[in-house]
Length: 89
Image (tube, rainbow, N blue to C red; front, side):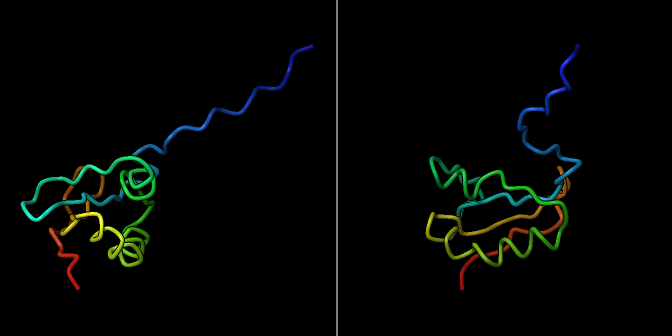
């Protein structure tokens, strides 16, 4: 008797599944590297479509600004869609 195949372990989504993401930038245009809980919540977040990515940035821009992010740039995989976009109010 054989056991049923086990489900695959958790893995991050592939770029093809969630191709949209934001690059978080400081005032000089350098990428902001977050760490700890901030990185878990805000860094490397990817979305299945542009609308979801834009909604997320609309909900989190203030928290990102508090972490030193001054601009964001939207990407679809490695294609720059637009930006840098200021997070100042």
